[in-house]
Image (cartoon, rainbow, N blue to C red; front, side, top):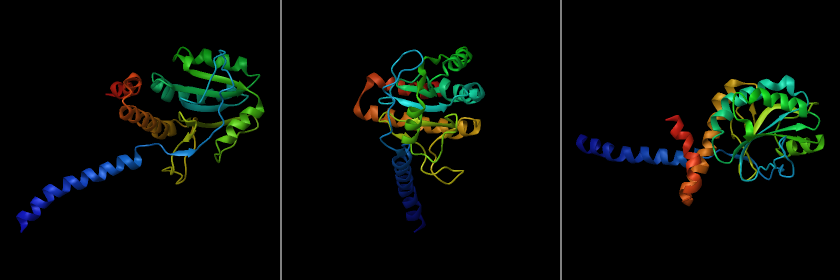
Length: 226
């Protein structure tokens, strides 16, 4: 009897383990969509005169407000932990929306960031207060912009112009709509992982669709990490 029990465990246990992990990939292999049909920013240009668009790109979206000089910590945190790490990927971009009239402050910030990384894929977009508020409102988050049109939170927008995040944040026990750029811990422990998940999601989709022309750009991250 013991012999049959041992044989059963040896044959059945691996199958159970495989099914467990297979279901985990299906359930947790994608970064949840929290909001759809966000307002696109495609009718605006960045500080270099280049047209920008959420559609077809993985975007980290931020709002630095009118007093950029006092919010540089956010930009440096994101540059060191997120931008430099993922900037090599095709279709990955940063978009920071700032009020018109902050051009000199933006240029000063770019001058400080440039020695640290190639910021050509970091788009600073000047917009009216109404446009900034409209884009932010379309995210439908529990956060708000302050009187200077600033928020410490940055957001992950997918190629279909949908907001991605967590359905249940481990700390707050509720949805995670955005990532506090003033917190290195949040960036390290949450945002990096979530961008990895989203990149892996697109990489898997490319493999399934058999699109080798773009596949290399998503595989690059894993190769570098190895």
